[in-house]
Length: 148
Image 1 (spheres, rainbow, N blue to C red):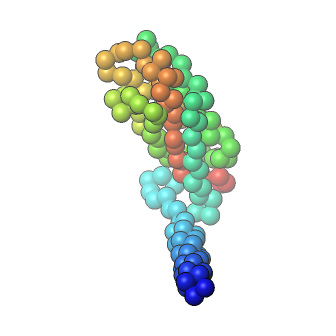
Image 2 (tube, rainbow, N blue to C red):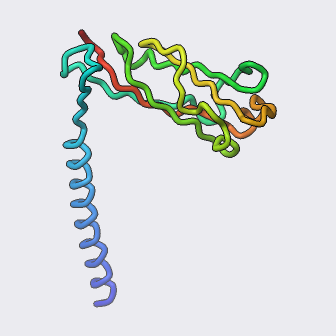
């Protein structure tokens, strides 16, 4: 019986510790969410700065052929509500073969609502079938202004 009580007490103590860890992590994340955009990019007042992020989705990205050896997809970020061009960063990821692609972080045709990414494989192998077979997707983040 005393072994059961000791075990229960240990679990209870561990739960208290986990509660404090969760609270500490929450406080750290909450307090570190400051975003600043510095010159020369300044299109709005500081309270209007917004960090917006998303993905085109695993297995749902709509790739189209681009110049017979690359692929292209357009990323919709209209839900962010940017009023001017944001600063965008991208990564193309998937189940395989994406690491040999070039142009995975290059942003094309940027507007405040969308942009395109055009990765290609250097050996010009059928990139479209590779991108679809291995579920390539675009993970992205954008920082900009959502008011003037």
